[in-house]
Length: 175
Image (cartoon, rainbow, N blue to C red; front, side, top):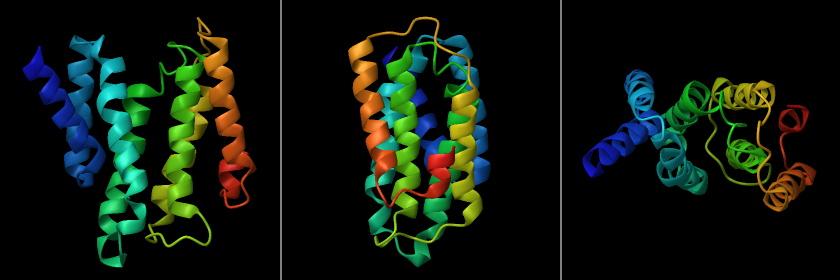
């Protein structure tokens, strides 16, 4: 079990941060892995996918114009892997889980589009993939079990507070 988990985490890291060709193949491999090990999806999301995306969000300010391809690959990999593996069933684990995912997407958009902050200038298509991801998230199946209402309310407050900030991209608010 430990070796398979390590392999899945490695493939997940390639799907998020590699160039587009490698990322596509890694996403396909990860999808095949999750078909066989369906219970690993939640653990992979919590222990690998979210921490890797948090590192991407925190590292935005460290990138310069020469490394724009790294940021673009990270945005494309995140959107591609999320849409393919996680968005369709995101509401099944409860409202809090779905809102947590939406918060991660909004934080990603905000990190790359916040006005007044130095950020690498990524191509607009990479940002628009994040907006498409939000649309897919909102159109995904509704929760069969709503989960803990207190946790869901707290995450909803966090998400709404992010939307009220002046520096949030207008398209994020529309999506």
